[in-house]
Length: 75
Image 1: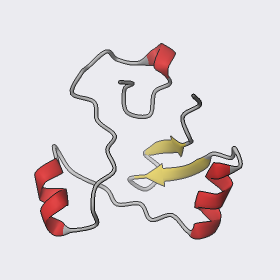
Image 2: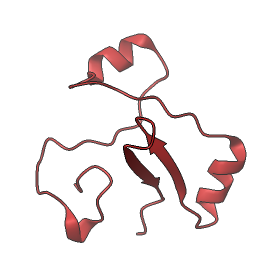
Image 3: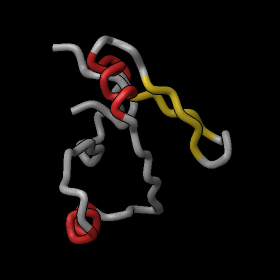
Image 4: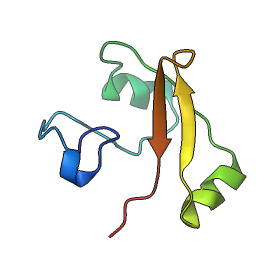
């Protein structure tokens, strides 16, 4: 498994890094855990369709303290 947001070649090797698809319920979020905090990002249908055509969704985290990039993993 790769590190959060890191390509396979830059993975931290930490087996605790997780990216999972869960149900949109409070119970599923609680089971996954918030760790030291949590963020919620909501994608539009256009953004999801863009991902499917090879684009990357770029976003700010914590008022531009960090940047995130979401892309589809290539097989």
